[in-house]
Length: 477
Ligand code: NBP
Image (cartoon, rainbow, N blue to C red):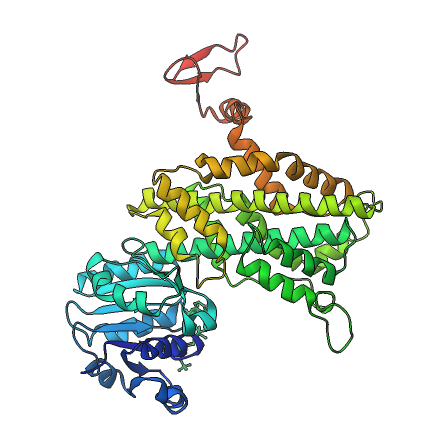
């Protein structure tokens, strides 16, 4: 037994993670259900480091030094359970199974509990950054026991992305905390992408800029506070011309967006937790709406907003306003994601260091951005932040964005340009800062039709009004 780590499941992600471990000096046992993948890996990349190719599960387990570290990189769902079952019976107490796939955190909690009872450590580790990240440095979000992290952490720290010399990995929390945080990362990613899409749409439809001109605007933005991987690649996509037609690439792509499910999981889970992640939800629904072709056919041609041409001065001014609106909305979307992690930590008993989460998302993952270092710094200054807006710097920025943020959304409404995520972010902001909400009226309605009772602002207790009686007397429930 010579291998410090084993990777089973050698499709793009597993193969690249195995190579990443090997390139960092680890001896890596490699295994795949179909052995041709294992052979191909060693033939093609064997020169990169020390691999031990294992054809059978028994050979694979025997190749691992103890306590064993066995990483699973197979399709999430039933395949993961099948592989866990196959290997768990070959392992011994104290061994570790790491699931680096995109598992649902509730499944991870279930698997962790079952394996703990068998004396095994199960570490659900979110891995972000796609195949390129897996090879050159992903952001790794491991959950599981502190003992398992003590053994695995140094290895993850070696292979993860680095920002300012610091690894983009940390022990997120116990059981499913790692996969939970990875899920929210993807939810935030949906929101970020949608917000960028809305900014593009506004610059095109309202200001009349071409995709190439918008690419330039995004390149400019990428030098400022919006500096991020997503803005960078957006500029690349917008600047790209389709070779076959000579048209902007973005104009030849069908406008129906796909989703693999992690965004949907974020919204489903948020509903269960009562976490109002409205910008993330709107981003997810925007993808769903884009795919409703029959429905879009039925709506197409219905009246929209008014249109008029902007002068170049106005277009420039509008561009600066869109930058403000995008930044403010993004700040809210992230704040929603962060709060959802806090809510889950309460619900599931996780101790999650929110500043550490910001820190490990600075590199390796899709939402990596300069902005995350700001969030890290905000938590460093006050680890107990309830909201990012409790930080003086962020509060100042949202204050500064007020007029342009509202103006951009008003213009979008007048022109008939859809901005579901921008509007959701602003409404969320206005809801939470409100002195009074119409939720009081909701409570009145609920008491009227369902005797759901209500609390009063001036006295303790639960009350019910006898709506059916002439005097509508109030009773104490
Ligand atoms: P896939 O998700 O395409 O899965 C292919 C792998 O699963 C192959 O090794 C295949 O073995 C194995 N497998 C399957 Br399918 N069913 C199996 C079973 N019943 N028993 C054993 N092995 C089985 O691979 P991927 O795209 O590399 O992703 C791996 C994991 O990483 C997934 O959970 C994915 O969600 C996650 N992830 C992917 C990305 C990404 O950018 N692709 C990013 C982050 C996380 P075979 O070769 O014998 O068919």
